[in-house]
Amino acid sequence: MKILVDFAKCTGLGLCEAAAPELFEIDDDGGLVVLVDDVPPGEVDAARAAVVGCPTAALQLTDE
Ligand code: SF4
Image (cartoon, rainbow, N blue to C red; front, side, top):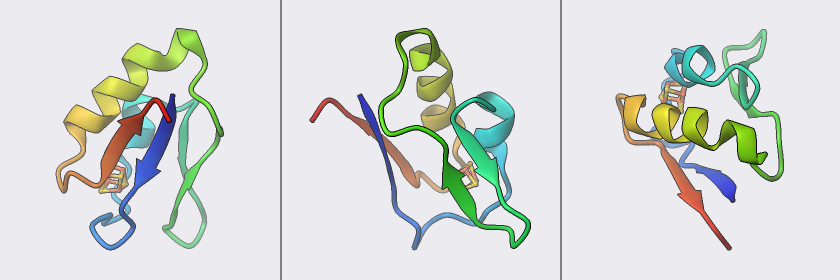
């Protein structure tokens, strides 16, 4: 499972980082960084919570 980010929608407020700190980080410039290429099995629930919690619908999960 991979995380797709629509950076045109992302506002960098970091709710995803709060929901899934192992998967997301806001860097010093306020930009979102995805920390993993593939979501580890133990982080799938956190990834889904981040997707649901993103206020701008900038995140998607894909199995491709
Ligand atoms: S919660 Fe959504 S808008 Fe906010 S930083 Fe994460 S991806 Fe961007």
